[in-house]
Length: 549
Image 1 (cartoon, rainbow, N blue to C red):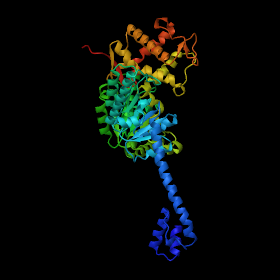
Image 2: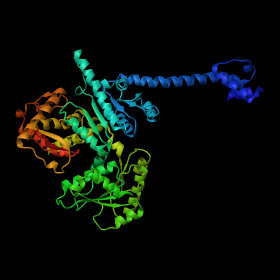
Image 3: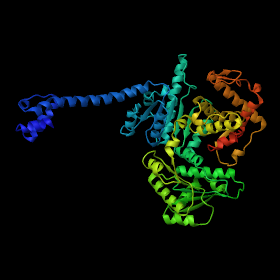
Image 4: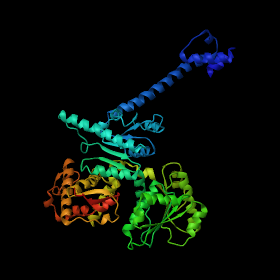
């Protein structure tokens, strides 16, 4: 601007003034630059300085990103995250909050979340994670964990398959050189893949379990299944005062799973098998949604555990449904695919509940942690809770435990119940990472133990499966195997026998053969074994005998 003003005042035409000003940026001297006044003389020095600064910033940005990529390729024990969509970004935030080292692979070079990674110093490899070269650039052979979180199920499955091939090849090369490949736990890469289809997710988990490999660390998860289960767990409906009645508005995939788990819970708790759970579905296409739900989960109809009632999402539809006589609503859930629609319906329901002086607890599921979710949490109406689906599902613990995380937490809670009057163990969130890993290992080892006594794991198709019982001989065999697994795990973690338990010295008096255990401690293992059917049912699986060949 200074150059333009100086040249223009020196009787230059506007076009000549612009042309001469631009030449200042490239140190171009000409007769036009002489005798033109103070403005041009100042611009003569500022223009090259600005140009040089811009070039340095551009080069710095380029080299900084390249430096981050080089740093990521040399890391050890880090997490490789594939995909920076909604789920991947939520996982990234949770992992960074937990101070985990992360390397990201993202196919879309224009993904706006790349800037978030750059600001946080997270290396981003731009490319297709299905290619081995891209995985190697992210340091997959030295990583502790792989998280495939792209929106495509087939891509996620392919990513973990390629990663495991690379790890297998590296292990083979290491054996040929008679070297040892060391990792914190085991020699396998821990892989977790997002699978959007619940049935496919269950099938893949069972197929992996049938390998009967206790060291396997490949797992699959469905975010909707996890969200539905966690939402019901955090906001349960009342089962203590007669027939329960829940309202579910705009049920998305997570809402459908919530209804499924609520129905199974009522099946297990009800004293009268003729009394079904009453479910009101609120949506403009409620009848079609119920038909789709029953088609996907025929057990809801076969077990006669649910009675569905439908109404539209209009004010008149909601008012008409609430005016009908019947069991009062125990809890209302709003689980729409669209946050704006879900919040609108939640506010409408809250208003109608308040007009009837009904203190029905209401919870709305929102995917984002910011925007609408933050407004509702900070200044929303009383009597309305918010469940942040991505934040609750995509946390650092779940990235480590996958679908076994729920079973691992249940095992830890059961251990606390066994303690009785003794000092109870800490809550899961405060538990040492080594003990969390031990609970996850116990959950993963269930399939191996069952295979040894002639049983296998299949999708849950019989809601009486949790009542399955092992024979006393089978209980003893499984309990002994569990003790042996625990002993080997402790030894691998450098624990040893000691007269008293000492976590600092890593000493434990129970690191002895099964038959040398005190009767009380041996019974602890038997209690866990007897709970296997209910633990499996909690993640949609059950125990059946292996078919005779």
